[in-house]
Image: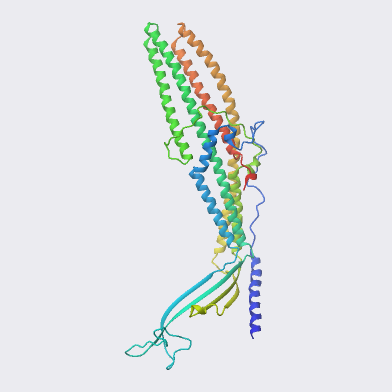
Length: 494
């Protein structure tokens, strides 16, 4: 008889497995994407003839100060710290998904003490029930209408179980794959943020340097205008010119002093921005040693648009999230299929703790679960996963388009900016010659003051424009470096 039961149990377990295998073939697999969401152009327009791959921006600019600022930013920037916590969270989620592939071994230890009324059979208590130390036979008499018997007893139990889900259709593996891809994407996001922070710190560092140079230029212009005012006042005292010319020159000098005040305010604003990037409170002591606008970055080698797939960490992150969404879709499809779980257990129970493990009981089993009707829940989950994957597909395409546009803008605007700087320099050379000629004529009494003032203002305005154009060129080169991934590549992945 026991042999028959044994064979019947084995038959039942194999029947469960066969049921899962047969019904498991009724699902469909997600569509595998075999193309990019956009068509890549063959090349960029306005590509420079030569370029350099710039990895370390501080080394490229030969600035120890910038290197120190970048190190402080990477260590103390709060956005960077949040990025690292997101990586830790994603990696923990990956470990959680991986743990589902292993069997569970729950250990349960229990102890209880109870006192309950019992009905005796005749004069004897039920067999197997003992009493307490104060009431060995278990009887507890109550006076009144009748007599009841109560018993107080202890119970100890211990059990060790095992449970394992056989991942027939890859549901757990797909979930693990999605979690792993999200963890890698979080790291790529952090690397993209590092490029952004490096660019922002460098941009503000250059802005501060440019404002210091602007300050020196304004002071030089104020000195020139002050010397001219002294000459005009001397000519006025000799009765050679009207008082209006003195007043006009004083107004010009006042305008330059006003610009100097604005310049100081801009330096405070830039210093506050830099403090935030370094994880410090605004208006903290923030000064830089660089007092002149550095030479622009060398042109970064642009390559071809498709190189952005390997050069930009944010593009890689978006692609990884697309792959993760596809893996989640596959897990949602597998969720609709039957699941098979194997269980086993070892256990013992006793009224005395010393009697535990004197005999061991066991059980094994297999169970299959399949929802023949769920009101459309599984289908709705698949549709949601499909929509998320499709949305991520378009988001990935938009990321690619924006990346290509950023590179193209930086290339085109950079080349035009170089031409503009050359044009400004020619204008400054001509304006300097004209101003010197006007000054000579005015001091000789042959020219008028308005012409001199106009030529002076023209030269000073061009000098400021040239400084701003140089700063703009640096910014465009920096934008190109950032748009091309800041020297990052897929080979740098860890």
